[in-house]
Image (cartoon, rainbow, N blue to C red):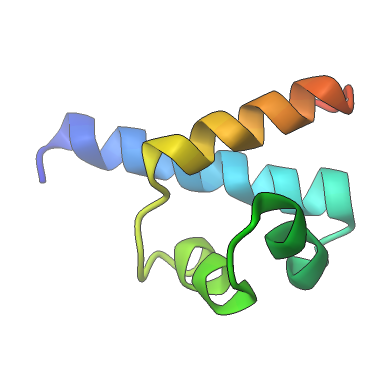
Length: 71
């Protein structure tokens, strides 16, 4: 990965981290349920073991906007 890819990946991970913390009081199970993903997958993304895909990032931003919280 190049520096731009690393930055995009980190921005996506930060968005997920914020989504989980602000929107769901850091409850990974609730976050996973809303996003339609298994909790283990969300944990791997938060830990950097797995990238946050574009579809999930769009869903994160859309739900945050609907629920009126900032990432």
